Image (cartoon, rainbow, N blue to C red; front, side, top):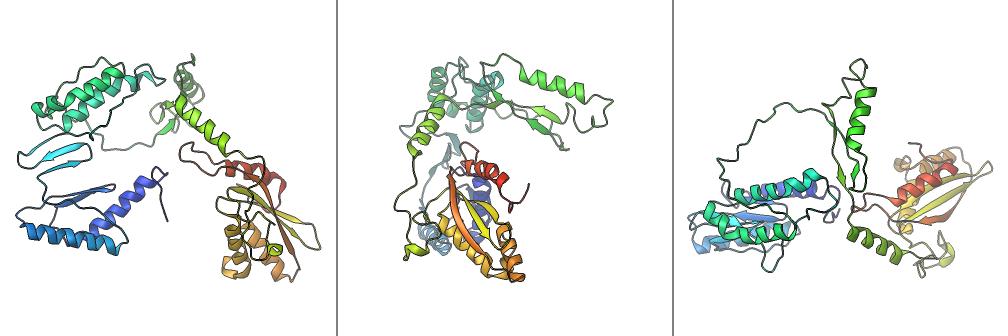
Length: 371
């Protein structure tokens, strides 16, 4: 199963795969010589001859090849750029790193973000730069680009080096608490203090006399504003939806050898659809509403497989009904129809128009699981 960059659980999947890969290559390296972060790896080899280093690189490439992966390896390096840090082995120092010809941008202090976020941006940048600098000299040599980026964003904060001793870790709680978060969208155009109103309603309806006060109080119900889409994101989404909009169905969307046997004549290859299956018998017809983000024909094949193999009789509400008809030796006929085309789930918008359309269409069918 492929996971695209930025998908809902892409980072977790990458960590899981990375852990598996580290276990597969542990016989090549000694303990604590290699590490992975997402798709970047770093290994430190001590007291190795050049031929031994080349042998390790060759074995590493061979191990990844067994997994069906290809990697690029750079060996015999004394200085390495890893993520946002430059590591210098001869001097034992490290400093911030940015790719050549790249421009650093930060959120502008007048942007439509909560005030707390705007205020913490410069301090968090200063803290990060200090942590990835081995000493004040390394910090001072690289801070100018970041200081200029803050200035362009309207921040007046002056970057200063803070040693690790100055950055106290603070008190750490050992006990975790289950917290319910309320995340209303933030906008400077809204004058009402939504957070204060919400907390006042919480105090009013779940007072200390309420039997639910233990579950809903200010200690375990918190509020944190979520950011609205910026103008560029809104315009891009509008342009994409306009360009994708079509007044009719996609043409040349059937690849059946015999067009007369196509489940939906001329439309079996259409994607991102809400479809309806109507089962007719000598009794009242039954309808089933389904969705498919792939070609309808692939979804149709899955339905046919669930009708054919008894161990798949509970795959869908439709297959359950078909097997009931088979058990009672009732003749039936199925016709298919496309109701609507809509966008499937997007990790950008966090919405699935297909699911919404199916829910709205499901009110008029009688073979649909109620949730």
